[in-house]
Image (cartoon, rainbow, N blue to C red; front, side):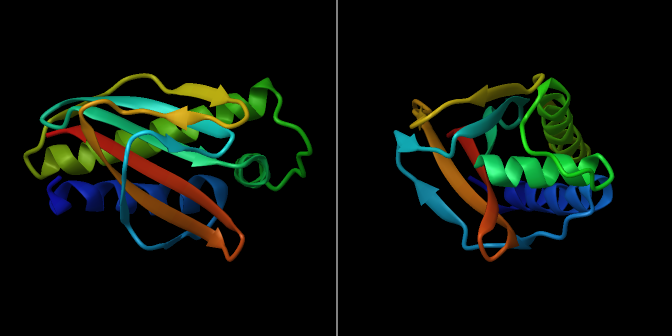
Length: 154
């Protein structure tokens, strides 16, 4: 995958998380993943079409999801993921990918996104077929991260 395509995902993630949830994220070490791979228990999946075809997955554990949703709701301390917080996390993902698509469009790369799908479960396994997956850890602090996995068709 073209490195020029990855940076807009990182840029949009950092900008939107700071602006909407008040969270500064640092970039961890970017790696390639082999299919299938296991994921955290909360996954928000968005399809990508156009010049880049594939999917973007934001994976996190419950503690991280609660931290992000709390930040989006003005710091209200959440203890459970209710429908409002799940919807907020999906919308955050939608904003990040919308910003990513805009950055890419401004660079001459047309991309469209699908509505986000919120998935929650134990021992989830992701199997992007015929796609390469680049994993980008977005570090909230030393123990909390959101993993952004971008899988694209070559």
